[in-house]
Each structure stands twice: as C-alpha cells, then as structure tokens.
Image (cartoon, rainbow, N blue to C red; front, side, top):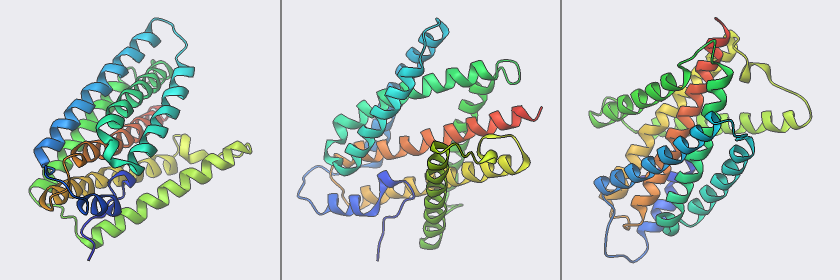
Length: 251
C-alpha cells in the first residue's frame, strides 16, 4: 500500500520511496526539514525585498520577473528529478522564486494602488494565516491525510494544472478564458476553489514530511521536503493575490 501521496509534484510518493531505498546513515527529521524551510524562506524574503526595492526605484523589473520565473522553473525541475541535489538547488530556487515574487508583487501593488493599496500586505497576511491554520488542523488531526482525502486533493490539483495549461495554450492563439482573470462571480468562485485546493495540499505536504521522517528517509530529503513545502506556499500566495485582485475589481 502506498504511504506517500501529495498533490505537490515535488513531494511525490515515488521520489520519497526511491530515496528511502538508498543506503544512508543520517536520516531525515521533521525539525531538520522545518529548519531548512526557514532558511529557504529567508532567502525568498531577501531577494523579494531586493526586487521590490528595484521596482520602487523605477527600474523596469519585467525582464527580471520573466528571467527569474524561467530560472526558478528550471531549478524546480532539476530538484524534482535529482532530489539528492536539493541542498544546492533548493536555496537557488528560493533566491529565484523570491525575486519573481518580489517583482510580481510590485506589479500588483502598482496596478491596485487606488483600488486596494494594501493588497500585498493582505495577501501575505492571509497566506501566513492559512498556512498556520492548516498546520494546526493537521497537527491536532482535525483533518487527516487519509487515502480518500489524498486522492480527492490530488485529482483536483491535477485538474487545475491541466486547466491552467489549456488556458495558457489558448492564450497563445489569442483566446482568453475570462473568469480566470476577471472579477466576475464565476471568477471569484473559481479562485476560492483554487485557494482551497492549494491550502489542502499543505495537509498532504505535512503528512509527506512526517512520514518521510518516520520511515527514515535520507538526510538530504530535509532540503527536498522544505523545497516542496515552499512550492505549495508560493502557489497559495499567488492564488490569494489573484483572488484579492478580483475582489478589488468588484468595488
């Protein structure tokens, strides 16, 4: 029976099972993973702050936003396929992703300066609130990562990924799906659903990390687990930011 499942492709069952099957002496721990996540988070904040400062000083950050997104995507793929390199690639990913978040946040801050002047602080606050709430729900076993729960969340996550992929392809041909970007009732409901699915993925990530520690995954998987958790939180932040932007459009 499979013990590991996560909607997050970074924290997948096969990757953890393969790592556990390797020979190693030092093993993964939950505390070690959280400590490494703290390091990644500080790296994200550092480059996000740098990007924000550059945008505030009038620098055209759009090329940097595109470049950091591409670099982050490549580093994420490398980390997923080579988890033993996570100790090197995860910090680099955090640096690139932080710069991307800083630039896109500055864009939203400028675009919604009149409609929602505190949109970034609201998005950051809500993201932290959701992460802490989901951790509490998982820690006290209010929500348990049962096989049925995992299957539902994974299916929904894959469905959202496919939907976004289709939307991107259609946009290349000049066709836009309105409710993804517009503040209509359907658009807001869609964003609420996506935010909910992203939040539920945190439950799977917490469970994956805990199970990895219990089963004696190698030490390098602490970096990998921290990386996977960061991926989910970044996704959650972006979806919350998108939702707040849609709500602001309706004012």
